[in-house]
Amino acid sequence: MARQYFGDPDSCFSQYEADQDRELSYRPICCECGEPIQDEHLYIIEGEFYCTHCLESNHKHYTTDYEKESA
Image: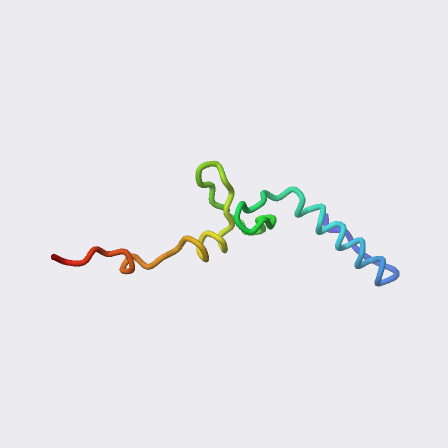
């Protein structure tokens, strides 16, 4: 059940941030950006965790860029 926050807005926000940080601490860490992976899916390549953003941004290329020249 989600926690409800009442009272002083500053202390409520601080508690909310602490709760969010605690939840993120359980998530696997992307080996490229170093951030907790918050997506529903992750990629594991040779035992390393990758988030979708890093995999697409850093490793997705157009096939045509790597085609061999015709003879």
